Length: 217
Image (cartoon, rainbow, N blue to C red; front, side):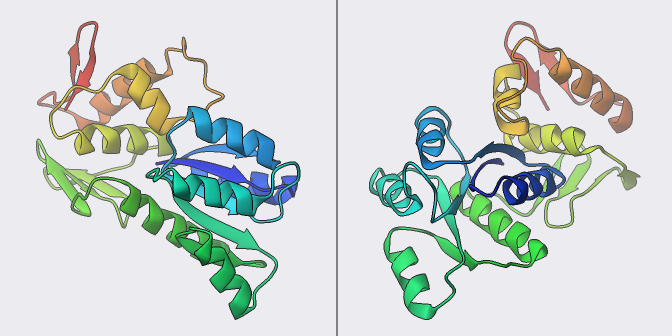
C-alpha cells in the first residue's frame, strides 16, 4: 500500500509514518496542506491520513476536493475535535473514516489497513501461488508448508507480485508500490530484494525475470 500522511505536528507525523512502514507500507509525509495537494496531484495513493487543521491549505478543503474527483484514495481524518457533530461534519466532507486525537496506534494501523483494502481491487485475504501462501491479515508467509521469515520490504515486494496474479510487474511499479518517494529511481534495491526473495523461497524458482520488462511470479 502507498500512504500519504499529512500532519503538521512533525514528531507525530514521523512517528505515524515510521510505524506504518513497519507494516510493509510505503509512506510519504508532508507537514502542510500545500505540500499534500502537490503530492496528491502526482501520486496515486491508497490512503490519505489527513489532519484537518493543516496550515496553508486546510485539511477540510483537501478532503472535499479529493472526494469530488472520485479518486480511489481513501481518506482517514485526524483531529483533536472528538464530538459527534465534528465527526459527522468530517464524514460529510467526503472522508471514509474519522479518528480523534489522541488515538491508539494499533487502531490507526488497523483503520489504515482496512481503508487500503477498500481502495484496491478485491482480492482474498490469503494469497496462494506456486506453493506460496501469503496470509495478509497475519503477515505470514510459507512455501510448501515451510514458514518464511521475510523483511518488511521482501514481504511488500512479494505481496505486489502475488497480487499481480501472474502478470509482469516492472521495477518502476515495485518502487512505486513498495517504497516511498525518497527512493532513488536508479537504485538497484529492487534487484537486491528480488535476489533475497528468490533465495528464501528456494527451489523450484518461482520469480522469473522478463528481460527489459520486469518480474513475474
